[in-house]
Image (cartoon, rainbow, N blue to C red; front, side, top):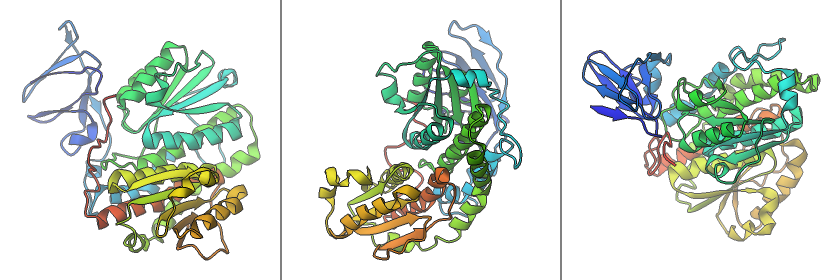
Length: 437
């Protein structure tokens, strides 16, 4: 078999008396953990027992094996009905592994792979966070932290748009690119554009040796382990966790508010335990989902950071259940979207941002008076009792609330999809790695 990589990723797995090709490592993780990674326009000739490599002019190449240290059992369901459910419940471990040695109580934050200086960070006039889909939602939360804690102007862009709008980039720009697989075509193309304009590029990914890691100036890894289900869960919460630690790393170098950072550090270290507590106390979500799996529309509301969770919750629901869902900023309801509310419409609201709770509750009351059913996710002790259902999550630093508030919404989307008897792990028309534009 002759194979060539051209723009889209190509990974070759080295087995014992067998060799494999695919676009992503988890495809045959159960069969081998030894891989060859091709660059653009490189060829490989595979037989059962041999692999030869060539450049674009057919000159022979020597390739080193990349060994992936993921446990092969991570690509198995291990007693769970679906990979997505397994990965939802793996989030405490994924968050703990992502924290790793970056953050240790009583010590300054460490990113040995970055080694940024105060001079470098002080020269950064703007940060772009570029990603697609779920990774972009993680970037929205990082933007709030970077602007509030580090006081650096930050913009979040969808990769497919970033490439074509002639972004204002120079040597004083830091561009952060987020991709679970590290093979997202639009994100890699956006990275190449940023480099061509002189920006410093940093990739955040979950897969060692992936294409984005070979293109970026700097790389930092989440350690979520392989994520098999198409709908991202543990990769998303790991991305926000790593980005939060990255913000602390920047802030400590820039000598920003140490009191704020101390609380944020403490809260990050508590996240795995709080995620475990939450997963042990939301068993009734499947019952609630039974009431709404036949709905044609579901709406999500949030203000500030809670809107990011609303957007991600809406994406999870639509991509696996095929129910039309949209996320709105709560304050935008009266500017048009409230016209969509009718008797029986399900409206899901997230309430964790302290200064915006009362305003958000007022918006929820507006949809209740129009006959909507309401699911509220909150970390506050609310006295209002006319919601259809309220799920209490553990309280944490407000910057980190999206990590916990998304978990019930992941399980809700999963439960709705199971009620509809659909394939949770492999939704129609979608792929785990979006390797084409």
